[in-house]
Amino acid sequence: MSGNQHLTTESTRRRLTERQAGTVRRLTDAAVAELRETGYDGLTVRNVARRAGVAPATAYTYFASKNHLITEVFWRRLSALPPVTEPGDVGGVLRGIALLVSDEPELAAACTAAMLGGDPDVRELRVRIGLEIRARLQAALGEGADPRVVGALEIAYAGALVHAGMGYTSYARMADRLGEMAELILNDS
Image (cartoon, rainbow, N blue to C red):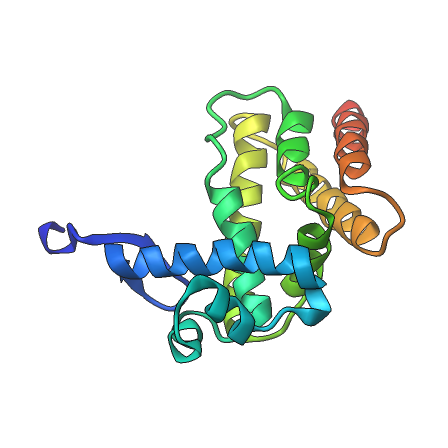
């Protein structure tokens, strides 16, 4: 792997050099800032590119759509969480994931909408996100975790995300409820 010394962050579409990773970072940061001002409906890759100081063609090199870009923002936040190193706090793991975007309502709603998108790059990121959430839950549950419990916790998270995305509850309240659901599921297993 000595030839890959200059490769840093793996993007949905390809491995990135440090310079490319910097461009992607500027684009994802600009997407969050643009969402704050325009909301999900007003967000365009072209406007994000302008805000990031790159050409629209450059932005489209990395992100096929606004849904792809927003899903990448969520993925980067999720993958930046500290690893789960010891079993125990399953509710805390779910709460931590739920709180990734809870302090930014526009971003939270955009992430929910974007992750339901059907383009191939979003699907690939959605799989990565799902696998990361599963790995975190399994680590929190410990070795030999019952797959049915893991599945129930995953469904609880997905349902809570949709519930909050529809505006029935806040993302902060959703995080609290996920802790309660984890407790109920674990007590029944």
